[in-house]
Image 1 (cartoon, rainbow, N blue to C red):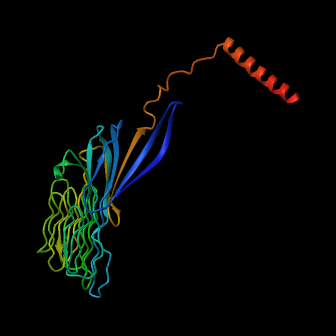
Image 2 (cartoon, rainbow, N blue to C red):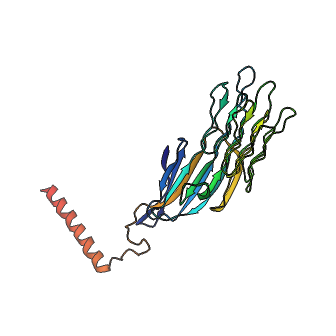
Length: 297
């Protein structure tokens, strides 16, 4: 779902007005598109990945132990009429103490009973729909792992590197994704993450990895790894780990000229000559006298 908001006005002289516009894309579970408006040559992008799912203990209580989604931002050069594809990561939600939990939209890995699915990544793609077309990615958090006792929490989405999951017992948690590889698999039958995908296995006691530029790994009886973020396709980019709960989000901010047909605002206002000023004042005085005389009559 797209939400559009005009965040401010900047007056540029008398003739032209520039507006800063913010468009927010919420999670829908499907790809969304955005067309660059006329006159826009660059946009500011912000993305938050989704939180990993929370696992259940033996009393069927959700432990809310999924990793938080990561954050990425940067500036993208664009052209008028260009189409960007927006993928907003999904939080696996709370399906109850069921036999398995699917991972969140856009790369979250599946989890099994007592485990939870990983959160999906949020990303922006230019020139196509493939993973290679991503210019900015915010990693999703890894799924938690419950049971009796608690078996570990999911790692946060990155940052350029996603966080490893944790383990509450003598099991091995899954690793976080990096800029060059998916997160390592945790205890078997956990699986490693891959490009765009968290480790995924809906078997008993598996926690799924978070989606990302590279996804986090999955693990048996331990937490899933967080996915990595990515800023290689933008300028002035930065990332931060563990910033988002629930579904992800993508925000596009840009500046438009609200009056593109305005006369050049640098042109000076023509001066009124002394003779024109005298004539104008004379007419105003004459009109005033006529009005006074009519009232006297």
